[in-house]
Length: 428
Image (cartoon, rainbow, N blue to C red; front, side):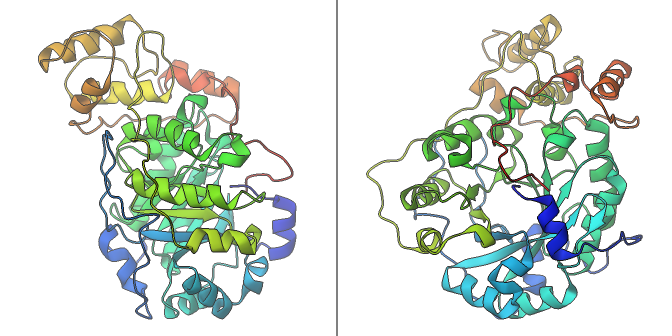
């Protein structure tokens, strides 16, 4: 997310770390029922994310149309006092007037809980008919504490949890796995969780997408598709994001940009493409930075365009590729009982393994993973890989972890660049 950490801490008076232990009680056991457990007020369901178009042409993974609590429109709240003055009544009124069904409220930063995510606030928002979810920024230095704070937010009434993991988690496969294992032990395997990370997978070859979106991970993927900040059009950010994220086969719920004054036409286009690509919902960053015209653009009626682009992809992989996309492919090859290393490097061994898989499944044995090969691979659940040793806290330590087998070799790769350009904001 885009934030000013110093201003946030000063405004909110972040409290000292609280001890959290035990399993969360009263947690809904399915993503479908999680929203209903505390959705008071009987608010009617909002319109679909953009238009009434349904299909996601050419996509590998077709998201269900009624996912709760990620269905429909959602808004992120970073600093509560700067979001409608922190008044639950005002937040409910503005949300309902603009078709917002869910609010994501920051609940912790690293190992520090944020007092703004309180039982009183959660209860008041639910009473007003809103779904209430928590989001936390995580760093990977203390993954078990971060997981405990995520579970704490669930115990306080969150109906879903969003993990904001970015630069600090690059290369930290063991930390990501430890965080998720601890979180799932506390909230259960079916509690709805989303990852809100970088949208361009190929720019971040060392980021553990395959852990966060893999077995026992998040069921939903909310990439930060901030087209104006990235410097591309809305159409381009969708094409690039879906090309690579679709292979992780998690429901994609796009996260759009309202800060830095994007054009109304672009906000409306973001909504149109969310629907055209088959997203069951979408969210916006963020409440306090959205100007009045942006609120109108995210909630007003839409004109159906003459045509929209088909969803791209999936990304093709071949000899010489490196990064987490290769890790993901190798995990599926292993699940299909094809012997291969899971190291994030598409060398001769992986090429031969892919050719062997292709022959066994009646595909042309090119040794290159194309759309047909992805479809065949994704019929197998990804093989679980244990990244067991202590997570790296530096690039040198990451290299040592990779050498010991506790991280793929690709975990040492630097990012191509940060597509979400840092300005006066810092992710916190």
